[in-house]
Image (cartoon, rainbow, N blue to C red):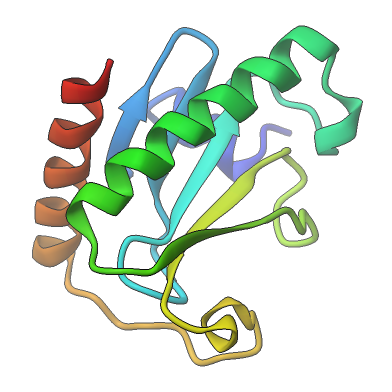
Length: 134
């Protein structure tokens, strides 16, 4: 059975896409820790990040780097925190989380409730910043 991320990649489930390349996609987390919390996902469905082949792993990391730069242009933050947890969805992915304090990275924190309209606007702004970078 395909993971929820594969279903998003295949267009079966909508997302707020911020960037896409041939082998990777990035979209806003719908239950974010902070505004702009983005998931960076390889299109190849592999459960664990470190099980990706070297080429895909490097592409994913470089893509995440570019996506983080775009997020920083749109979201007021001190840094972009990076987390790889992978317990919630069996598909390798990287969390990019705009942070002001270390506490912003605590996954036990209450998730933000952001309207679909605000998520769409935020995704469009990040996508525009990403496209300007590449």
